[in-house]
Amino acid sequence: MASHFHAFQLFFPSLRAGGGNDIQWCFSQVKGAVDDDVAEADIISTVEFNHSGELLATGDKGGRVVIFQQEQENKTQSHSRGEYNVYSTFQSHEPEFDYLKSLEIEEKINKIRWLPQKNAAQFLLSTNDKTIKLWKISERDKRPEGYNLKEEDGRYRDPTTVTTLRVPVFRPMDLMVEASPRRIFANAHTYHINSISINSDYETYLSADDLRINLWHLEITDRSFNIVDIKPANMEELTEVITAAEFHPNSCNTFVYSSSKGTIRLCDMRASALCDRHSKLFEEPEDPSNRSFFSEIISSISDVKFSHSGRYMMTRDYLSVKIWDLNMENRPVETYQVHEYLRSKLCSLYENDCIFDKFECCWNGSDSIVMTGSYNNFFRMFDRNTKRDITLEASRENNKPRTVLKPRKVCASGKRKKDEISVDSLDFNKKILHTAWHPKENIIAVATTNNLYIFQDKMN
Amino acid sequence: MSAESPEPASAEEQKVVYSVIFNLLLIVFQEMEDKVISPEKAEEAKLKARYPHLGQKPGGSDFLRKRLQKGQKYFDSGDYNMAKAKMKNKQLPTAAPDKTEVTGDHIPTPQDLPQRKPSLVASKLAG
Image 1 (cartoon, rainbow over the protein chains, first blue to last red):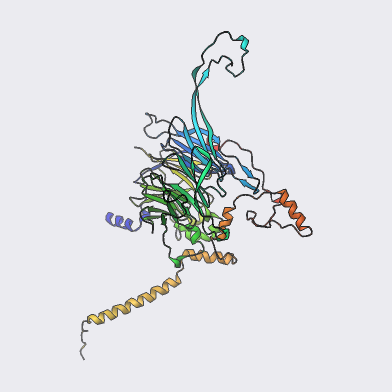
Image 2: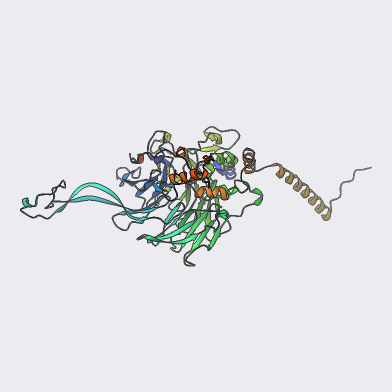
């Protein structure tokens, strides 16, 4: 009987619970306000771990950045890894106004990317629609005391009262974390910036808007090189826009950009100064008989991410996640359905604009599992090796630490089983667009509209 | 007359029978396919029924242009007064139902102005 059941499961993979080598995900922390009335400024717009995973940055619609730091592992607390606590918070971008075009420039942080750590300070790039900023986050834990001309509170001493000279010394103080903008890269984008990506040379980075991609040097703010320009001479002929771009993790000459038509272009900067002609074009052929009004919209790629190895890249379109082998352009090597049950709801999703939602995706540290968000505060993980997948929910109801999260299931049609949720009961206002995976550990950060959830795998 | 047992069919006859069965099956499947509409196409039909004037090129220029022009169009007193002077007796173009759509003739009026932004406070994530 047992063997029959296993055989049965082979034919119905969705019955097999657990994705990710049987990682047991547990709630760890949640950040943010509890109330349902969400202020627009509090909407989280980006989440990113730094290269060591010790720091976790979030950006929001109000232009603010909040950085959390993982506390050092406590030897007595062997059952969980360190918690993430607020390390620094600052206003990265302010709302601006373009007087010439009479247009408001949103302060919303579209992307944050960390630089690898070179010295005691941490550096990150944050961008809104028009301006990229390099921020230095540094710690100060001592201050000089014993000035000759100043009192400790800063008031100036009367020089005539100074009778002896002393050398100021550094004394310890409470840790202060300061964020200061070191570079401001402005005025290079006519359209809205959707991506920034730091090159593996750690000296240059790219920024991409709807129609152009620029290459910058981190030290130079008054100049950037345009490396991709897809703006047609006549805007009436516009058929596609750039949706995301990323540098290859190892090859400093290679980058990719995705389009609203579902294609990915790989470019080699050694080939020419202007990379309008791609080196590779990744596109899955479409069956023309299946084409509908929605085809192009749902094929638009909302995110592209290289694997850590650099051999693969992952793309996210409205209904699926695709893994591409860089050596094969004509189709993806793996396709995972995120929420196929939405295909029969496309009409209403078009009417309420949800069909234009831009979901991101991410790899785990070993490139064996990929994760992406969905609606109803659900998020999905796909294990590339076992081919198992799991749906979990970010909700305050699952608040007990070390309690394993219960897998969720959406019932597409017909009889709804107990514990399943029907498609029509899904809350399309609760979307998980941004997720991040710790580069080394099984720790994930999942952003709901205005809350940040941290989940860890159950240890022991 | 005694019933004769049927002779085994020759290879040729077998081939003919199989191809006839195959063709019949093909016809049946084709008919089935024609009757089954993909969920996507069903949704498309629904949309077309609700919005018969929806553009010929979906996901094409209109949609992309709207995307590129994200960003509020604010009241510009210079434009507004020039438009008023030009129009004289004619009515000023009224706001389009979709205020984010930028058209050549639309001059925002003071009534179109969005609400003032709330003052900046600390993020609740840091609370």
